[in-house]
Length: 259
Image 1 (spheres, rainbow, N blue to C red):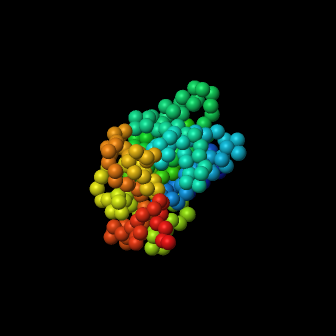
Image 2 (cartoon, rainbow, N blue to C red):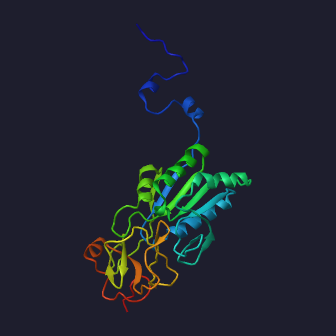
Image 3 (cartoon, rainbow, N blue to C red):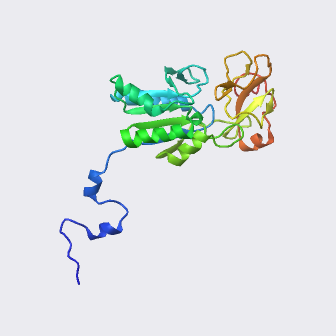
């Protein structure tokens, strides 16, 4: 027997994983989740603020969120001097509740900018995907992929699993040897550390205890106020990260200055 097909339907639609055009028009529109990642010093926070600026110029309204900014304040700060106030995401923050509160105050939310997203919990990353899928909010996350042991942060891992788009930040960061740097080494007094708390907020500028750097895990400090050792981060290539070599001169602020 020959099957009779309606003139308005395509018999090959049943063989395709893509819904027919009429069905696609009826499907709900969703937001997207994008994760821009890279090592320290590659310009992630600068990019976050640039995207916020561009979206705002088009009349879109958004919220800026941050988890453990290097400045210690509730803001997104770039090393080139650009800063914007942001909402601090705490360990127990429900990001969906933050957006609902904005709605209650009459603020429309088209997008979220989330800096230092590697410090989010997997549950908070899932909350961001809920907002994208159910509230059609575009989510832009920025952060480091791996910790000082070269292992994925839990928040970054969940973003790799769930994000619609993954984009490495293209600004190249160099190791002291001149090779591309990708590993965020934690350095104390010139020695690359291999053990310690996963979350320790510091910068590529050297800090002594009592300075503006803070170290914390679940809101508990990781060092005493009497400790005098210096802890900082330095971006290394894979070879020198594995060897634990920070270069011929480990003194001075920021990346090594070979002078």
